[in-house]
Length: 179
Image 1 (spheres, rainbow, N blue to C red):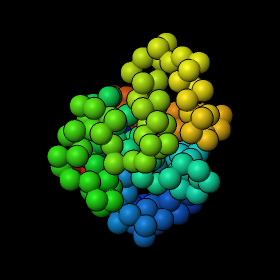
Image 2: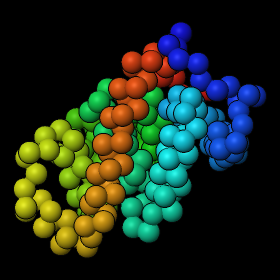
Image 3: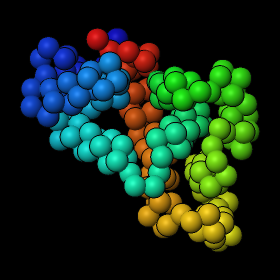
Image 4: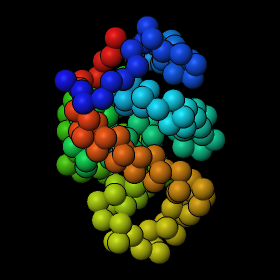
């Protein structure tokens, strides 16, 4: 049982209600991290705006962002996000064997070389921030990535940390569905 009282869909109001309706329409479910954030509507709105920002990102593709979230959550053992993004990757054509291979070796992702370079940068950054070198940054620039792209991609990866910790502390069920 959760240690905090989240807002149930039938009791949602304002931005939480709008967000819940958007998730039900677009994804068919309310993600557990968003249910957790419903306790604080202002933080819920910030997270909702982050989701909207990345959904319309001009250069970071949906598949790249799903790979980032999948592998970042794997590093953190954040089961909800790993399961959710694993199912997204399967809808994009990945098989269970592909997901397992990526967990062991992120270079085995199903991305083109430029996106694979960004994914490997994010994974390396999360695993060992101090190991990132100037040549890692330069390699991304050679693939055409901007500084904004690098910051945004890494932000997407490290954003898994806050929800992972909060869901564990507040004992939020990490199954993929909320009704």
